[in-house]
Image (cartoon, rainbow, N blue to C red):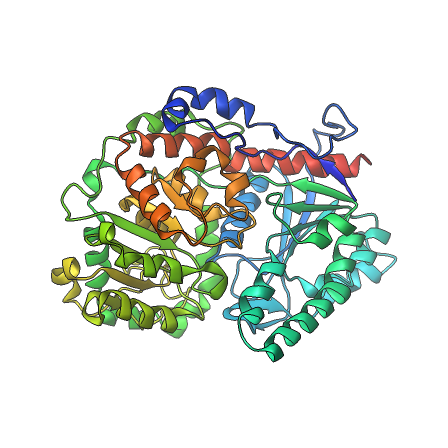
Length: 534
């Protein structure tokens, strides 16, 4: 059992009712700055602030960065920008196609072909570590797992050269084993058990044993983390609440967003795939990072002020029923099937479900949707645009909703819409902001970044009371439903829809609990503790 560094923030504590939360939000958020149920307190009563005037030299090794779309990629894009804006020297080791300092040899991930995984350590870094005459220019190496498999053999070398090792782990692998292998044949089950043993013994145990600190997004983590990690740090979220913002009255509706994306020229999309623009992918990724607002030590007055503007807008005022949105990967562990099956409930007869994302389960989910609401009530765009399809200055939309143009006139006839992958973060934020409710039935989350993003956009979240959702977002427990209970799910949707203050409360929670400035300060403080030997 490892030591727990109790400086992570969680919105813990569930008020008896949302009316109570509306009047006590500020008090709850101030208490949330410290965990209410620490497993074990740190032996240090105050943070170690030695050498706080010296910028840290940080190497971040991650396979997840834009233009790849994922919660992990967004988290580390925001953290890296925050580190740099705070004056720290940050170098990035990542896969080709990202804006990084060290390009690590990589191959497509077998379980998700659009995501690349490290193949072997970069030779330049290996030589730097084994050359006794070289100076290693890092104080901390932050390894983002999974997988970062190529960096496991480098960990002892980093430690020999005096570099502290922080490993953050972001996936509940034990749940993935069940989702991908256990609901099939006995052969699949045995294969899943075999792969899991190899994964744990040859990769995971060495990774956490050698790490000085293992960071996890919530208390929901694989058992081997708690069994083998020497020290565990509960990370904060790193959400950019200046990108994920509520919709204002003059910004249109979900129908406008879908129609605008649907009528974008196919010729523009093809033009965006030229070799010249592909060659500029790294410049585009840099622009995505540089376009973010400057990191601030505390939430800005503007961010606090916009909390007052949320709650007066009803996204469904001009439509026949509520618009539900799911944003995320389409894969077995996400349980999107539940959301689609629930659309046959009588109380959702006029509702629309917009599914933003892509993944290995997409064809299965489209077929399921057709059986639930009828094929004529399902829209799905099949053409995929690469993440590097267009520069940020282009008028081309990053949405996959390109054709047919008739959807602009027929949106009201569709009840389930598959948009495909949406790459640009600002456009993803619009899908949250233009929806009435964000929904998720995934019990595999270790943090659930999409929930924080939705709350930041002022959109209430109806999610399953499982996994990290029930611990990280306990303060909105009354918006959660019991797993596999469609009646409870529908009841919670209407509870949020009928609460006039739900959107205002959602934004306040995000700004006060999940902003990137708190995550940056928290991690930097943890790094300094490691360097000071604490």
